[in-house]
Image (cartoon, rainbow, N blue to C red; front, side, top):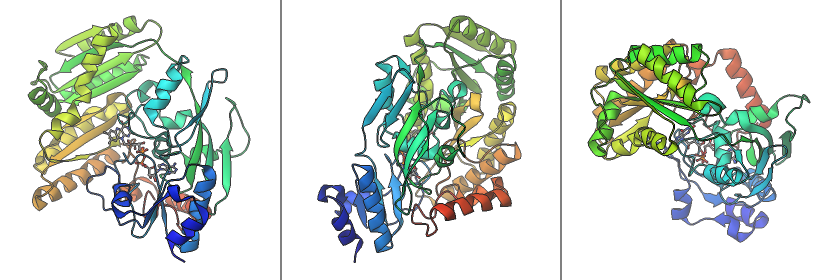
Length: 454
Ligand SMILES: Cc1cc2nc3c(=O)[nH]c(=O)nc-3n(C[C@H](O)[C@H](O)[C@H](O)COP(=O)(O)OP(=O)(O)OC[C@H]3O[C@@H](n4cnc5c(N)ncnc54)[C@H](O)[C@@H]3O)c2cc1C
């Protein structure tokens, strides 16, 4: 029997879509150059039972399944393979419970991050993980990629908030992991195993998240530096002295220049970089002032701090405008995502500049300086094979540089297909073998998301 007839036997008609244009529109994420195959059909389950049914139909028809959230991934992890069933959880978008006493939320995977943030804010709570895509990415996708964001430097990444999951395994069994309590020491941490698993171990159908009390509005500081090294030293010193910024972003000269060209706002386009920092919580004004002083001591050419949240937001806007400013060039944009220990940040930034020059590609860099997580942005003409191959060579060199500096090839976007060729450079043979055998145990036929992540 065909996949369609297997699905029709098990799912309501409105949960199956075989119109080619619609199926195609769900068949790739936002990764620019990653290949996407042609999916056969799209399933849009509304319940866990329908997810089980969709997996059973795919198994019976012998076709792979690609779990999909909102398709905002940047690594090709949710791209179709030929003949597959795309399984989009976007209709499983209910916030099932917000528990103020235990400070938890229970959600379906298709809930959009910003919708959850708004809902918990109404009862004075805060769900911190804030990928820049928070207004469009799903909680299920955030969990499956272990998404980071701007406030990770203080609050941690998605992993730090996932305390329980419901997962449908490849063989159709429904497994509940974790807990609703703040503590538990029962058994192995299978919840953690599924965080960042990129759809290869199971389909996440329900998530229990930890929440924290909503912090007061932040205080904000900005600091320009004429060289990268003192900026890197200032960052390291801020942490050495025990400060805990809730945001610490860096914008390099090439990015400052492009933002200023498109959205004039009197930026210092001769500076090597701009640091943007925030603090929240008790005495945040005094803390931001102390952080600003450290920047001055380390040679910042201009430092300014404010406690007015609206003015702070305007300052942070520089960071948010970088991507849209480069989009105006109408060129291909390929974001990198590497992370190094904080004290190696200046070396990473200097090395990225050299790589850009060596391959003659435009290579501005922004990133989460407090996490050592940088997003160099390759800007090039995707229709020019020579420029494209130089951009790809620069991409590989940045990965190698991050590893040389003791870092990681994938800070927060995951591996997908984009970074798969590099994974053996970071994970040793034993670890890779253990990881692959876990996958084989849970999904011996590689029904789920074949060719991705591992
Ligand atoms: C403009 C922009 C800014 C971004 N900024 C950030 C950022 O600051 N930080 C960051 O970390 N990322 C960022 N991203 C990347 C992306 O938004 C994240 O990776 C996000 O977590 C993906 O969520 P999604 O719902 O779109 O998942 P998708 O792209 O649909 O899927 C991503 C992966 O998760 C799997 N998956 C999705 N749902 C499920 C499920 N229910 N069960 C099992 N597997 C599932 C898919 O198979 C795939 O492997 C950005 C993307 C864009 C376009």
